[in-house]
Amino acid sequence: MTERDLVPDNKDWTWVLQRACDECHLDVTSLDVTEIPSMIRHNAAAFAELLGGDDTWLRTRPRPDKWSPLEYGFHVRDVYELYHHRLGLMLEHEGPEYPNWDQDESALEKGYGRADPIAVAAELTQWAESLATLFETVDQDGWTRTGYRSDGAAFTVESFARYLIHDPVHHLWDVSTA
Image 1 (cartoon, rainbow, N blue to C red):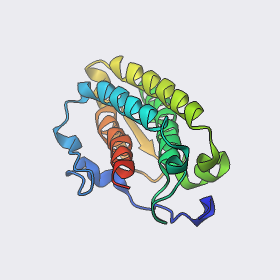
Image 2 (cartoon, rainbow, N blue to C red):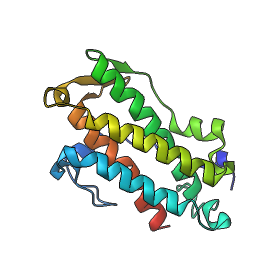
Image 3 (tube, rainbow, N blue to C red):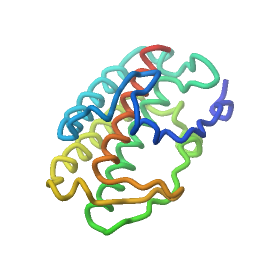
Image 4 (cartoon, helix red, strand yellow):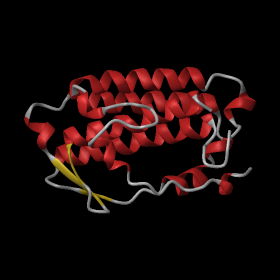
C-alpha cells in the first residue's frame, strides 16, 4: 500500500459540535474549554510516546481507509501548527477567513509515512505546547471572536477549540484501535 492509495476523508466533521462522536465517543459539547490546553498537552505526550515505538508498526496501515500511526502522528503535528496559526488570526483580526487545507495533499507532499518518527514526535510536542499556551491567553471576551473556514463554516474561538480537540483525540483513538 502506498501513500497515494489512501481513500480521502471528505466528511464535514463540524457535526462533532452538536453531539458525541460515534467512534471515539468524545463529546466536545460537554467540555470546559479551559481544559483544552491540558488535553492538547496530554494528547501530544501520548503521541510522542507512541511514536517512540516499533518502526514497522508505526509505518503500517491497518487498512486502506486508515493511515499508519506515523501518518496520524504527522497529521496531528500539522493540525497543531495549522490551528496555532488560525487561532492567532482569530485573536488578531476581526472575522478572518482561513485558506483551505487539503490534509491528504499535505500527507503526500510531506511524505508522512516516510518521516522520522522521533522528529515528528518532537515537532508535534512543540506545536502542541505553542497552541496550548496560546489558548491559555484567551480572555473571557476572546472566546466569542470569530473566524471562517473557506467553505463558509463559521467558528467562535470557543467552537474552534472544541472542534480542534476532537481531531487529535479521535486520531489517538484511531491508532489505539488499529
